[in-house]
Image (cartoon, rainbow, N blue to C red; front, side, top):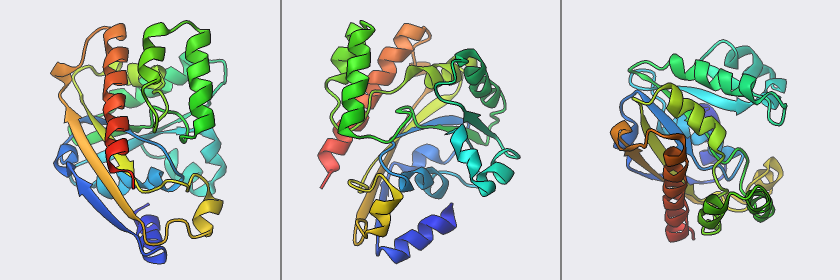
Length: 234
């Protein structure tokens, strides 16, 4: 992943500016990252993961196992491949819980709480779902988000419930606007871009212990991600 990002940086004449990197200098932690582009999946491996201080396990969609590299390597390291919309929610959440139990003092778990790359259409569908399921409090908070999707609560809650003694780090970033697909990358839309990243850490003692409290807390933190993106988007 570091090699891929380094190659993209040279190919597109990009550069990266990072703040808050001290937040990921020690484990254990859960890393919750914004998801806006195919390429942003490389950011945690490049700017957070370190073989001597932080070894990241990943939560990824199962479709990625079609990639032979991810299949061979990914299933032999600490990762969870989730089948979205499988109808077996308990089984899928069990994979996350199992991953969380393996987190040691040098380890972390990466999760993209949005579950998909941001787009206005996906935002509209997410708001419609919250409205249809009468999640009024969440809908009110989600309507204030304009640059990120409302976080899905299942994966985050599974991790936090399994290991409530672990800190959470958030990653907000900008610079990938208009590059949701590989075709966008090949069209050169990243040429000359500066990617800005910002990490911040929340101690586990500050995270509510009830499921309802954790959902509200996650929504509030995701609102902070949205506000940071709004303030730094070019």
